[in-house]
Length: 489
Image 1 (cartoon, rainbow, N blue to C red):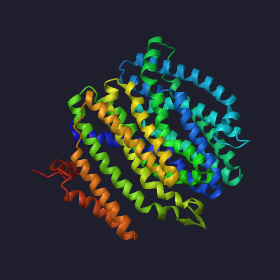
Image 2 (image 1 turned 90 degrees about the vertical axis):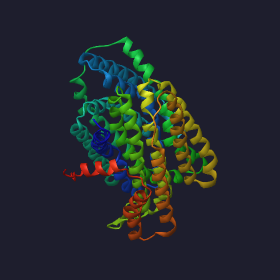
Image 3 (image 1 turned 90 degrees about the horizontal axis):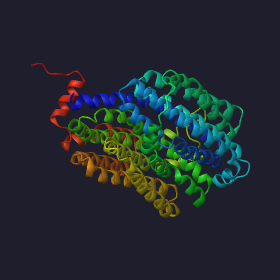
Image 4 (image 1 turned 180 degrees about the vertical axis):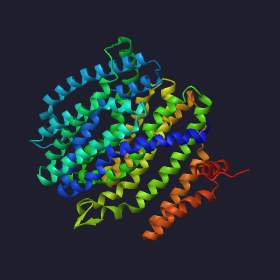
């Protein structure tokens, strides 16, 4: 199978599983008009802090078992061994999740004072504990659907989750006026329901089998993902807590609203990740072919994400001001949050590059290095927040996030090249970055009308790439073949 065929398969599965992930994470976008028009910036700041807490705790509840399960289950060929891997993983997860849930539930009052700094908010963390518990157990049915390429079921369950969460939020927050309490009650009910309908996927595949040896192997592979995951979450979310302490809850709310718009790129990156992991694991036994594909993936990833970055940046201010029946998509109090969107988009492109550099870690079983990379990124991010927030506020927090992801990707690249070298097409990648930067700067300084923005995006960007000689003859031919424009003779 050639490079174009491999990349076409990767693109196909990125789109399929990306739709499912977008349905899941896209709920954040769908709920933004509700939250920014019903909740105050301070109330939305509380919502952001509690969801940040949930994200951090998800790392501890899973303690790397999701990544370990994905790796061992995907590479195992025997059906009985697969059942043993599933049974062992689920037993470990159930035991630790119950223990951690009870500990967390009983500690909610002091935790709420520490995290939120407001009395009477412990009920929010109690509901958050339940959400974390249900979501942890739901992780593995979703992983099974991905590994078995059952995309229709995967997307269906995601869609049910989105519709239920959205409906409950509208009912409890908008109609019954339950405010912040309604936000987390909606998510708790939805998480419990989704786990209930996902459990049959596990029952149909699991067998009464347990392996002490597997426990050791799973922990050996997965535990390094705890500090790595916490460091990653620090880069993604620690700025909310730092903004709260250095500024106030209102700034946290406005920043979080703008950050959510920047998550458009994260949805793209995660869609790519869902297909990328099985893709590179499947090529692990064909090193020459794998490295050729990995080099091409980086180039095309930058090509696509640069275009999307420009598109969102050009039109985000128009989007948040769109009005329907006297209500704008963003409440006016949150409009200033769009200033951080381009930087957050760039940060998540860096996260995508980190994923592209990752295969050597999996294929050479070097997960012990992962905490090093994410630790470097977290340190850079936290220092950046300390230095930049006092002077530039939310814009400083956004740049600290970008710097953290850049440092993480760079540290990973330098390390992996030592034991799994890949000749990436950095010359072509530089052309993409140059043209994207040129188009972006032109927009910032010269192009405020919508028509000029559209021309820059759909004509200026591709034309610049053509003029710099970015596209090869083989790529033009591959494009013609994909579009069914093969030449006869």
